[in-house]
Image (cartoon, rainbow over all chains, first blue to last red; front, side, top):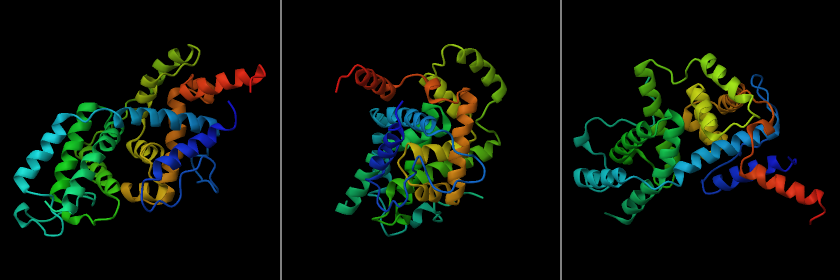
Length: 103
Length: 189
């Protein structure tokens, strides 16, 4: 394998992240100061792991979306109307932020 | 439905494939994963008023999904990982067969990682988030994400019993590289 493998891993990550707003640092294969535990593996091993991971992941991303989800959204629209933007739905009970982890 | 609401609905739909992929990587079972995605969509729909339009919807949805997953884990007080010993024994036989680690072995190894390492690896390596975004989604420090990624990679190679890239066996890119290298050696431009 040539040294170019690590560049491929960078590019695939960078391209994938380009559509995300507000990204700052990308996870490079060769970063600067390393954390004390978990020393870096060889760049080629990391690149292969990255590709395998991406392949497993992309298999599902590229699969057709099961009907159940479109049906779910149709049911949600019927039950709750259009997606709530701005006004709190008091009928749904106390508002909880689903991005807060249960502790 | 206003244009903003319609766009939001379309963006939700567009995020479903990624949510399914993230869910499968977290819980390892496609049917459980789709249940996770279902619960995520229901929570997201009824809480869209807490989402700020213009911010990263995908990251917001991923955060909901991983919170559902991890709170389920805590409720069941049960870890996804199996006894590494039994799995490693099975692999040590397989590993002797010319080191061809197929995707099923990789998928199985991934499922043996501690969930926080698996989550970090997937967020950063497959879902396309930066370390900072991954840290927000996982609710931890950026340094924690980095060390989980490094430990996860190391643990994967330990579980798979490989320490060289070549031991993973050829994948598409490796095959292409081998063909190019062979061509170069033969003097083909």
